[in-house]
Length: 126
Image 1 (tube, rainbow, N blue to C red):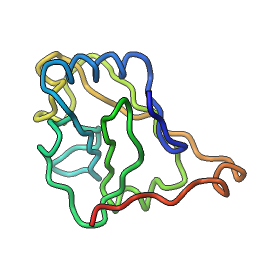
Image 2 (cartoon, rainbow, N blue to C red):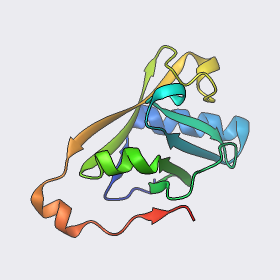
Image 3 (cartoon, rainbow, N blue to C red):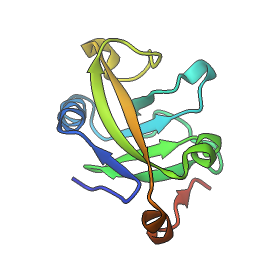
């Protein structure tokens, strides 16, 4: 499992990503800032969601890129994201896990002062 200093996943989330990859091929995750897209991360076939200029790549989980809305990143840039999954259908109706009765969620924790000083620069969509 690939992780970054900004991103991790629970075993349940990794198992669901593996199941979805087997069914749909390469995947991507995107977390928007709210409104129509909801606030949960959504899972799409790779390239199935068009990134905006400046959106941020938090890292990869088993080759699945996890992108975050550029404005949401500015709000949460001091937090570590842990991808998890729960039963139920969230706001991400177009997300690939929805038909399985699952919803990806993120748990956040603030970085320590030491962690903040050691974080690498993020990659932005250009």
